[in-house]
Length: 210
Ligand SMILES: C[S@@+](CC[C@H](N)C(=O)[O-])C[C@H]1O[C@@H](n2cnc3c(N)ncnc32)[C@H](O)[C@@H]1O
Image 1 (cartoon, rainbow, N blue to C red):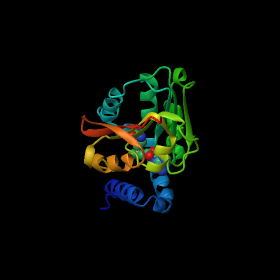
Image 2: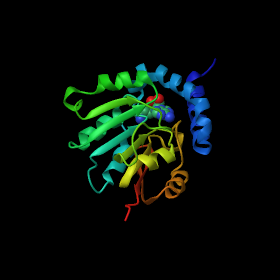
Image 3: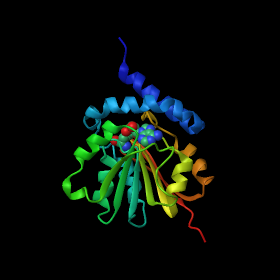
């Protein structure tokens, strides 16, 4: 019997590896990844475990001040965006995702008291529709990193966060040791690595310009 879940997980890892190694090849994977997550949208929230966001939360604990402009990249059904909105009551949060059906569910998941501060946009993380330096924090939970775009939209002195719920078992996973040099090359200078729940995360700070 065909194990569709296992095939989907392997495909997600392949797309991640290719996008990290050769970002220009991402466009070949994009329609398939979008379709994969549109199909998963109705069940995505039921797949979340109690500690899925533990590494994401632990990396947020390492921030020295509350961000005001925050982006959650690959927000899916909005769990990261809503976590951020609850933690940082003065912050405005934007969640972006490729998959329209994920975003429909994210909007349904957003309670009215947060909807003034949390918005969602359909966008590709490899070409974000935001000006340079737009965000104090750009967060990723179980999401393929597009380093040039992260470095572009994080403001000087701001942070980027990358969390993987199940560590190396996460289908979309990039080892922290692989993330760090990519970020260093793009002006990130301070790093905090955390282990929490079954996973791990990296918080990186972009150099403040003189
Ligand atoms: C594994 S899910 C994680 C969702 C959410 N962050 C969470 O942890 O519950 C990955 C999400 O990233 C989205 N995604 C993948 N590649 C993307 C890209 N290039 N731009 C925007 N979203 C993307 C998918 O549509 C999917 O919703």
